[in-house]
Amino acid sequence: MNVAVSIIVSTRNRAEYTRRFLNSLQYVTVGPDCRWELVLVDNGSTDHTAELVHSFCQEANYPIKFHTEKQRGKSRALNMGIAAAQGTVLAFTDDDVFVSPDWIKIICDYFDQNHDIDCIGGTVLLFNPQDAPITIKLSQEPAVVDAASFAPDDIPILGCNMAIRADALKEIGPFDIDIGPGATIVAGEDLDMLYRLVRRGHSIAYVPEMLVYHNHGRRSQKDVQDLKTGYMVGRGAFYTKYLLQKDGLVALWAYREIKSILLRDLPKIPYNQKSRQHLKDLFHILSGASTYLQIYSKYRSFLNHNINYGN
Image 1 (cartoon, rainbow, N blue to C red):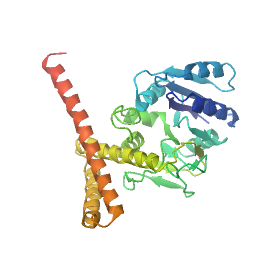
Image 2 (cartoon, rainbow, N blue to C red):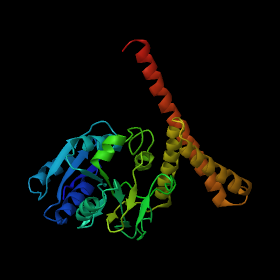
Image 3 (tube, helix red, strand yellow):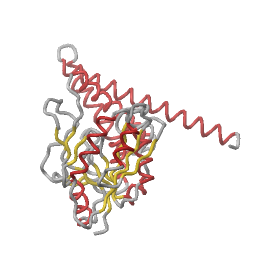
Image 4 (cartoon, rainbow, N blue to C red):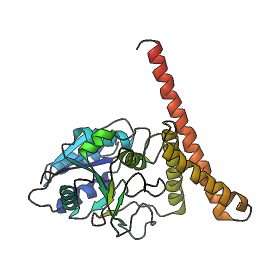
């Protein structure tokens, strides 16, 4: 077996979550040929996260690399983790997740036995049943997704339970630093990453046995709506990013979603609350599109300025 796994996690001002996550990894079991490490990146915390991690490293039964990325943004932190990782497979999860004891073993075994697959993810269950049933993945049916079957409004795996071959990630590039928690576009970094994979011909496998528990803590209707709003804004940014690249497939997806909302819901707005919510979704998609256009315009302006002045 030539698979070595680097688990990459970003954290910010969540020392208690980090402590529980670090403790949970001590119960991981792997085969004798499966090597792994944790690459933990502190994204500019102002609490006692650093002290906690340094103390934990003295007694941990697994290797930990600890880095600090002071510029805010989950994608920035994950990119620092990618640069520091030495594994042939990079596994991504979050500090509010508990992985199953055989999580790493399943990742190692799957990549060792399936050389035609470059990205996998699996089941995401609620850790606390009192939390809202969101950011979870319940299907127990294995599946393989490529560009033809990919859907931006129903991505095949979640970013909190995702593993990618390092060579494939090197080919498509790191996370987009303008997308993700702490960035201008607060959600959609996993959508963008997964699409870039299938766009370059890589397949994504859903492996139900690859199980994690999400302790996200969102319970109120406002929590749920805020999360959904972020996803819609992220999708609008995603559509715009690839429309600017003249990507015909993404243009088709955007057209179909916007057309569906307008034709299905616009006539029902006066008397149907669900249709009114769908129209709000369209507003958030367009807001994400507008925000990404502003980012793109600033980049173009910056590049043109530097070219014109010979910098």
